[in-house]
Length: 104
Image (cartoon, one colour):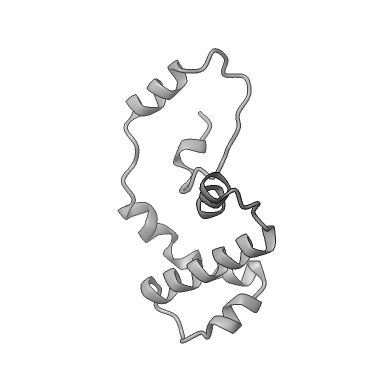
């Protein structure tokens, strides 16, 4: 999405959703090939898999990811919260690992 945003800002090019989805599939395929022990998978097969099948490839890596992923310091969230006048509405925009989206 950041690539589409930069294309819009710097090249005045309107993003095409289908192209963005294809980009995500390609980048996730490359990531998976590099980091996950799985049978060889051709890019064309990866692109054609249903989303749920793709998600299942990562199920077993969740604990390893959580164990290796550093958490954010509480002071960061306090700083961000101090910059908003109200906390009764939340807008979750691609928070990545979801650590910032947790509700207490």
